[in-house]
Length: 158
Image (cartoon, rainbow, N blue to C red):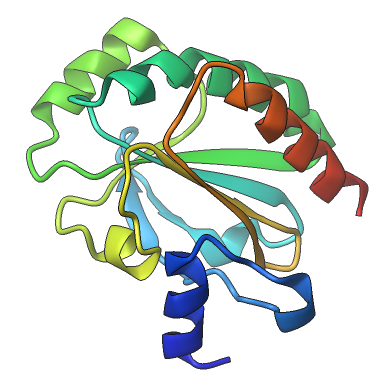
């Protein structure tokens, strides 16, 4: 599939399984100092959550995402939080306060955010075990975590 088609599908929030949209690969530095590559997650369902420290809905959903991560990780699920800020100091301070257990990555040049056509904060992307984008969720409203759980369960069962 061409990069243009992938970009168009992502920009409209579509990921049609009949037209497999491969998740753009990336390698980013994590808060623990290690590099993490998406392609190394194949075989697992991966939620990618783009967030910023200045985004109240992002901060509201992070503890809920951590609960999802802890519950489904043993079943083959991973959650990657990608901070989109150029200066990571505020995010790093906030992470100490929040104490989330899922991996946090930093995208200071916003290349990964551009590859995924992130236009709203937060944006949450679900990638299936084969590396195909299946869901794109833009923004966060209380209760969206129920939708996330249903999407994760569906993809784990496949």
